[in-house]
Length: 31
Image (cartoon, rainbow, N blue to C red; front, side):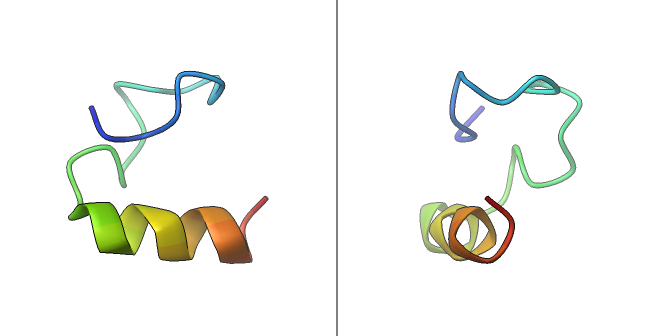
């Protein structure tokens, strides 16, 4: 998964398989 390991729902995170750019965007908008 591309989601940060700090995320509680790492593998089940809907954004886990999104492009890296999208992950960064989500991380920025949803801290």
